[in-house]
Length: 603
Figure (cartoon, rainbow, N blue to C red):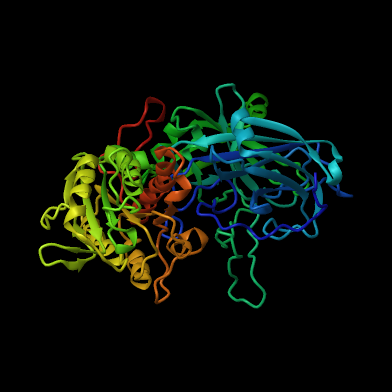
């Protein structure tokens, strides 16, 4: 394995959902980090028998997670540093997107850290690495492999274990704020430096570390020449220190964990909470423990507080008048629901489907068999194939099964003036057709009545649908989301106006799918699809969300219709959830929770 000893890692890859803070925290709900609906997997890491690279103490391990992208390894995230420990259990939970159809290669690298976890690995000792795929971890749920040094050499008996858990669509996260009172003093010349660990007890009675608080004030990383100190690029944790060192009544900084991590979304699952006195050599002194459940924790919601006696079982047996080793108090608990695409659909959100068809002269005379609009009685043309493939999926999410069908780039009766947003059923008061079959019939019947012309302007239709979407936005409900399917045979001629219209539409409940029909050079159309960079208006304003998906139909000419639909609709669920998360609109009628996940609604 080509592991480089102590090699520097590339800068962190930008991520839509990056865990904030130190260990196991959930993503923030914010316009800057909209929540997506992609399948996600949480990875927990532990190691055994690591190499000891320190002279006076043991190694201080830290794990880096890298993912292969376009042949290069990019850093995704890194764990905390655990002092003087050759068998570390890391509290950091790595979160990765999971795609069934892709081979996602991961690399775990373990270092003996000589500095802060946010700094590069230039001066750190390489303890070993392991490569695998997301699919392997998901399939096996628990993977244990030996660590390798460079050139395939074993790192002694060192092993790394990765445990995976899928984050369900119904998952949310909980924000907890703890403090303690009158903890036992374990230090001789000063007071204890307490930290708290929370463990989830699984069905097989094994314990999974959910969260570990910090004991020392956080270092304030800052960039050279900057004052006041700023966040390092790619780091999301706050810079304020936690004042819990040398303190028998500490107030730990509030933290967030996913409900799946905390209790597997089961309120009655037992949790074990342990308080330790921190030791820089890794030999932490046990202060006490208590057991609870998420159900009990929820009593701390609002103005209430919940507290537990922190018990040392040995003291309880030996000391006759032993009461406790202190008290731990849950000051506050807030539950935040993370809604999925299905939450919105099952809550009554309708997907309103609009199709816009290119009737410019470049398509060729519909009466000619070479025309892209030629109606062959034995085989549908490319326009019809694309329309039916996408429309048949969208119609399942529209209760009235009525679809708006528009045309652009043609001269239309009665005056035969050029129009770029006409109803193909020629009813200006109601452009909807009954079902996909109604759209097909209106398309076929309008061809003999119009004159193909030009140019290829699509901004008017985008703006027309956007006006309807804007009316929907003002309801402040997740009731309708709009998908505009544009079928065109060439590059748009009003590119500047189209970019402007797309930027405006990115703030609305709307997605745009563009299918290029025919054999034209669609290179310039890739500009509208934000996959290769952020789309901006002519004035430089960026889109709020990436709402455009462009595909040339010729790439799917010999594939099944489902392949085209899967490609062009793959991003729609993510776009729906991004929009409603940004607007903080919950589903209209959230479905009741399943028996094993009857968690409270967000406050």
